[in-house]
Every structure is written in structure tokens, then in C-alpha cells.
Amino acid sequence: MSVNNLVNVVMQVFIIAILGFGMTYVLLLCDIDLSVGATMALVGTVCAFAHWSMARRRSQPCSPP
Image (cartoon, rainbow, N blue to C red; front, side, top):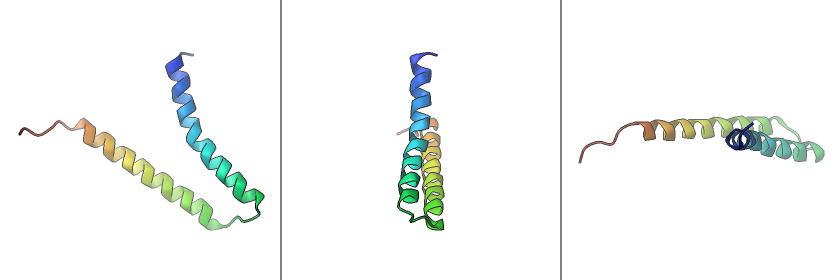
């Protein structure tokens, strides 16, 4: 496994790990409700849309001056 592959895997797992730590904290406090899962889904959707939008914007050629 090359260094680039390892960095890519760590970056992908890092986001899931942060969400997992947050959910563990909520579960340990016995304060679980449906809004926590809904908020995680909403944030994930917004981040995915923002990422897609920025990637699409970068792939379009610049307009002439």
C-alpha cells in the first residue's frame, strides 16, 4: 500500500470516525433521539452537495474576458 493510498483511506475514515465519536457521546449521555440521526443525514447531504458543486465548478472552463 502506497503512502497516497494510506492517506486517502485515513481521510475517508476520519469523517465517519468523527460522526461515530459524536454518536457515542450522545448514547453515553442517554440523550438519544431521532433528531441526532436526522441532523447527521442533513449535514452529510449538504456537504456532499457542496463538494459536488465545487467539483463541477472547477471542471468548467473559464469564460473568455
